[in-house]
Image (tube, rainbow, N blue to C red; front, top):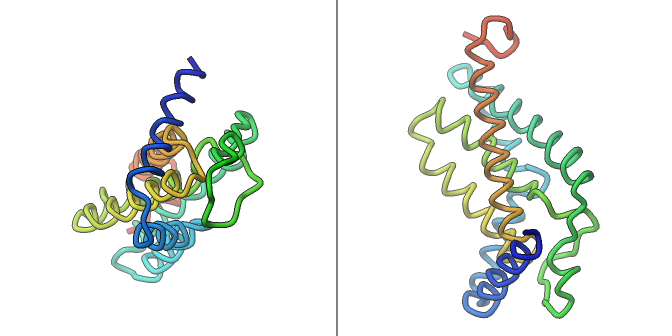
Length: 182
């Protein structure tokens, strides 16, 4: 099963590399990945929301989902699964951003993006389209730039959305007063 998944992932990466690569896409995808580095854009958005009295609860929940996603994805899953990055398995690929020494599964950029996007889409309805568009572009950039296999990105989106769901559920539970802000 894992060989079939790896073959499927590799075929998608080869398709991206052979059919979508251009100077414009290289620059756009490099910028999108830069926005997601270290969850920076999502941290900035969360802090900005926390500062705003009107959106403080949304900001706290977004930050909580981001923290949970980071703990589960970066600290636990990557170190259990230890999947090599695509450029380690496909050494002939030309990589246009710095290589990383961390593992590939799941995509941390994608976990962070979808964890925050899931919370914001539910708490600030008018943000749903822009945050999911940004999250999707950041996620796509990770496969485009050969930093992750497509299945790493899909798993990252699922994990991120699961983290947002957990935080949203906890925010409705009276026992978790820290998240219940009026």
